[in-house]
Image (cartoon, rainbow, N blue to C red; front, side):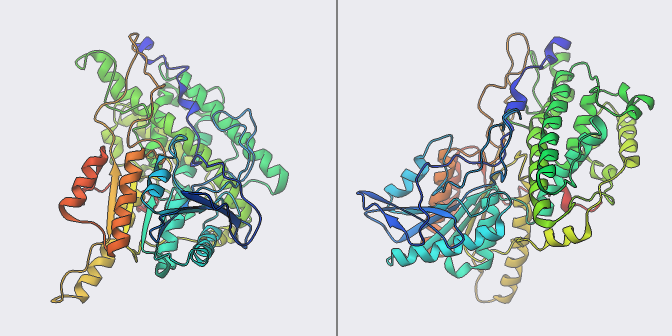
Length: 541
């Protein structure tokens, strides 16, 4: 059995990049008005908004009057030391993005230009959590484009991750400027909600596996930066130790003495890791682990044991590396903006958080007694307390409410470890209330159009693969529906087509035409009854 769980050098910790999308290397200039190269058949225009955000516009000679405004995802607002696994060597960039790029492939942008649509996007004036300035930049960019190209008739806003947040916020705030919106893998309605999952997981890593992790409340200035980078190093180190000990269940040597004194170290460390994932809401399916497949024959003990005990923990490890890095970097970022500690779990009941999951994952948690012991330890552990003034300031940052004021097409993966699928569930639930109110107001006058298409990228039933020796393979591309904003060209183009239809008609596509489009996307559902669980932030503790 041990040789089947020997995953010590699989590339789990190499897949931890956050929401940074590939960028198009188009030069920009610090001018207020666009400078266009006049090329045929597509001209490029560059410039900067009044807040200093560099932008790029690409306009085909057969421009049809509709422009797609792309908002890119979260980019780190600090340089990352080269020694940090997966994300080390990152340098701050504000290169503008005019549309989604898939692994360096610009086919989506080329497709839109070929159809006569224009595309544009900025690099934003500030990196990091920048929703307030991002919305302002987008508003100015729309005005700038329409002034330069007065034949413009429609503006479609779309974006991914934090860019999806910016898109939804823009559509709620300034619907008159837009004809359709596409918030993709949309971040939670508030930065507080977005950080809850990641913060819970980071606090759990600190509490179970390395108390020297600061996990927030970082100092100001250079000292705080050093603390955050130190936390990144510690997080990846402890995750590496957990990865190496998946088979043995040994606890990292940095774990608190109380773990050993209380005998909790007799519970496999993978069970504690799984518990942290469950209480945080991190998906138990990841890029390479489906929590249903094992090596060898489906009837063998090795297959069943791996699927029930190892695979869920490995999925949490793979997803948790991303979540923990998010927790460190975004917490540091938002604390600097807010002026103090912002994560608070003093009132969180982690036992209630896992009440249903603890039964489903009983084997992976090593049974009810082990689960109760681990939860009891967490209940007695010191909690994180936010600075009230900092919390108030953080809560004043931009947020979206779920109002749908223009035809909207949203999409996310069911096992996204950064922006959980439940965020889209929340958006759909909020809009359903809005639609019901509108419906009651129009009784006897016809039903109002239902202007939200919620698409979910689905994971295959089985996708974990193994070598002949029974070792899991992690060098393959991430499975559909996993990883962050993991959409292919076909999925992006289908969303773009749906947005074009909505923009032209003033309402979302419906009926057979919609379902035909979704079917051709592959790996995607538009089942209105499909509703992934809400993020833990919205669950009552």
